[in-house]
Image (cartoon, rainbow, N blue to C red; front, side):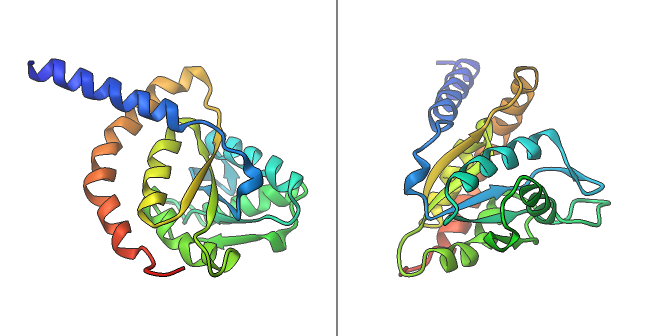
Length: 196
């Protein structure tokens, strides 16, 4: 098998895995919702971030006992963190601000999850938390993989991506996968709690 054929086979396999992992799980089992950040400009969410917030808001309004972690730091040239934007948008949709914890340091998916872990543990003390990951459909597979590395039980809450944006988003995600597997997964496993 040639290198080109192997690369195509590997790419198709990874794309199939991404599609399978992009499913929505029953949110009734979740201990917490983690909304993964995306670009915010001048305190306003990008379309990608807005869709993630909308997906999370639906669940949080259906389950008033459920709390959330808004995860995302301050982007280049910005003054407001993605987490603060998420919290403001959730409040505008009727989610009580006291139910949303902020993680404002992260700049990557691995950091979103690593820096959110102490907050997640507050929301589900003494047990392995079932976390509903609110992120884009194309991003959910990698987010779940990294959450598993931390010892979390990740559930999916996919925000749909417009078809016109999907090819570029999937290509970018496929490019990020080797780093996630080779580096991020190992780093996160080292942060995994030995006991819940």
